[in-house]
Amino acid sequence: MSKKLMDLKGHTDGRGLLVALESNKSVPFDIKRIYYLTDLKKSEPRGFHAHKNLKQVAICLQGSCRFILDDGKTREEFILSSATQGLLIEEMYWREMDQFSDGCVILVLASELYDESDYIRDYNEFKKRVL
Ligand code: T46
Image (cartoon, rainbow, N blue to C red; front, side, top):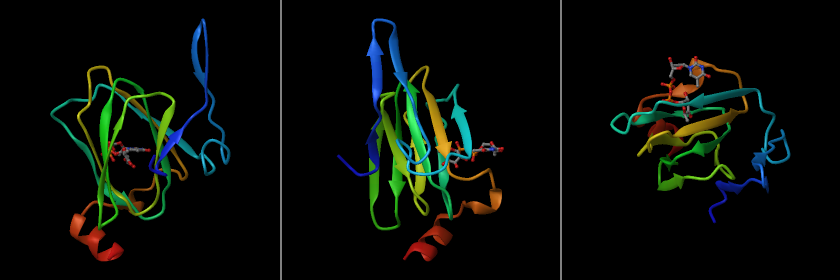
């Protein structure tokens, strides 16, 4: 398994599944922000940016989706379809998200507060910075 894919401990019993996430334990940073994506359209890919200084863990809570992570040299593809699997996205990875299934819900835990100046939205600028 890629080091980017993390197994999250699930507690399943007759009532369902519970997954607990804790800063610096199951999630390898202090969680400062949480956001989620819903009502995603198959025809509307998202992302297309990198972050200078942000770590995140993305978890597909319902349905499935694809993340592409690009470090400037290699593009890796990840299909997320389990609430007990997290994708660790460290700083300076270009990301693209698509192939959202019906009902797809993505939860993201982030190491920093929202800061638009942390985004690199131009792929050529990203490539210049990483290579
Ligand atoms: C990422 C992928 C996985 C906020 O106001 N606060 C926030 O914390 C976030 C994340 C976004 N926004 C606003 C900024 C835009 O006006 O929400 C709007 C949509 O954001 P964006 O176009 O950046 O969404 P995605 O899905 O392309 O990217 C998001 C995150 O921004 C990004 O960090 O890694 O999800």
